[in-house]
Length: 456
Image (tube, rainbow, N blue to C red):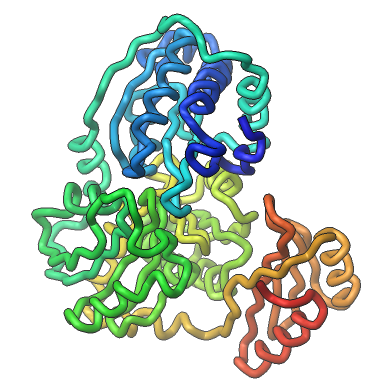
């Protein structure tokens, strides 16, 4: 088994070269041992507490990998609840709804079709990353010399569609107005979940790439501009109120307005701020440090407490729990909710957007216009071999600024700021720059490119 498949937040690799059924069995065995070891004496006595949920996405190799994963879990004596082909947020719901000690979703998220992998969650759907157990699972799995063992645990198949739909739709306000939206499922799990959840509502859905063929018409990553072409075209041709493009496993989304203009996810976070703080005054809202200054400004303006956090769902979810935050938004398209077990959900995000757009009763672009008060580069990658040295060099060059090192280095001036942070897995530095004026942004970005190197 290739140790390179163990990443910072999940397990991922090419099937079958890096991840195959043998690897899945070993990962299932290791994960079951780890997840059950964390149970307290009280938790061990609860119904389903020693069971583990397993779900999978629509990739052609996800089902055989899930079967092997389950066999490995059973070999430890663990009971498994197989919840079938689901979007990743349904896994978070299932763990909490059923009271299991954790769950594993077989998915490679936004990666191309030849990839697959495993997202592991613990009790209450707390994420298992490199610093919260994934390294332990790797050690156990890599030490296994065979894939043999008695099937000491049981397997039950559950269909949670009805319960999950009820959970998602409990956030929908009654009597929303009729809306027309274009939805690009990217040939991913949203193609199954959107019809199951939203059919019967006063919403006309223009469906794009809902089919599961084992291939992706375009890469299932909504953060890449070219992947939004179809939804933008549909919004303009069909006269939609807005459009949404999902990623492969249905836990992230990108939105475009009625003109086909991108709505960055930090701006969507900013739009949702007063909506949540009206219902939960003075609450904390978490956002990742790449976000526009408009996010913290809107939180303060609405009477909330802003909490700036490191990039990544492991850090965002911990920050949400630690601060009892009502809501959190990440530039990557993950949106987190207190009333969804502090976990992210793209489907619940759609529901909240429907509420906001319906209540506003005006073009979506008009709602976002006041929030477009800064200019930003978006995230730009640079190939850098010595990442630490380059970040230290930047800190020295901009020593007269306000500096912090929450994630990489953030440099803040009165009229502009930037964050430069390292990739967890590649020789890359990721740069985000924002300024009050477009000319200032261009000047500073040009300056930084000379200092860091050539964008890739």
